[in-house]
Image (tube, rainbow, N blue to C red; front, side, top):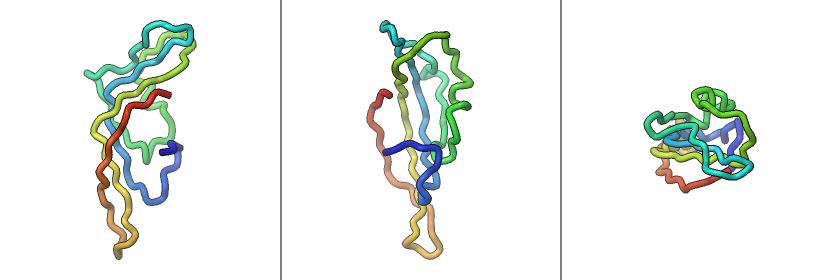
Length: 101
């Protein structure tokens, strides 16, 4: 899946709970947690314009980082079924796999 700031026209909602986030220092060393599982954030990527809201809650030390690791839970994907008249929102079963960017 390609993530952009504009959803596909038939995606109504793609909501997930971000249960953890960490940054990997460019110089090596242990990842730096910026979001703990005790403070999850639920967001809808179909309506997300940028990551400002997500990152405002994070306390990040000044430095260079080479990667971010996000842990997701509870994905919900809703698309517009245009084969029906009128078009109807339909939830599609969604699963997620780990990804480090």
